[in-house]
Length: 289
Image (cartoon, rainbow, N blue to C red; front, side, top):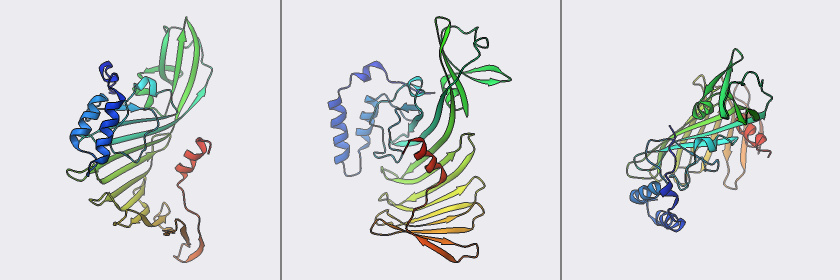
């Protein structure tokens, strides 16, 4: 269930919020819990509840706590990219959802929906009959229809299709805002798992390693980091059967060395081109970049 902003919270001055954020940034262990509680309360946010936000939050949680007001699920539904989150008892991000959809105008059978009153409706079609949903239920579907009816006429109708759903869960070091473990799962448009990534960081918040497995549980990527800085050092890439295909080394000048391996483990080619997972390529394409 999504929670929305109460009217009094909208009256909190921006000066107060900016001041709170300033205190947080200057704190030695960003930020003090009391300051996070005050800020979250001013935004109408409580632990372990789902909130929806405009699609602009950094998915890597910088900062690792909410600083903007949530919006209603009805408002966020209009976007192609939507985001939701929960915070934990320390008022830090606990779970985060980033959902990419496509919206396509469609012509609807007016007789099929002739009995509807005026309003906005969400539904799927089962045996060519509408199965009506709440807006929250609709968002979780691989696809659904949205129809707006005014004065007895359908004035807008779209089909919304899920493209990509990324879910992450973060656990922190005790009494710290530094991440300890992050687990991320990526689903395709049919809500089938593409891959699952688990990463660990040290008490300074620096990456130690990251391991990615496919839907079958086969390791397809392993990244080793420099614990002193958190910088990536190497990533081993494997195919869906677990056979190594590439070794990417991250160089100090910002370049990469990408070594390609044959089936029998020989290096057959070396380039300076990075590797991007298919879902990231799809994200860039859908953004028009």
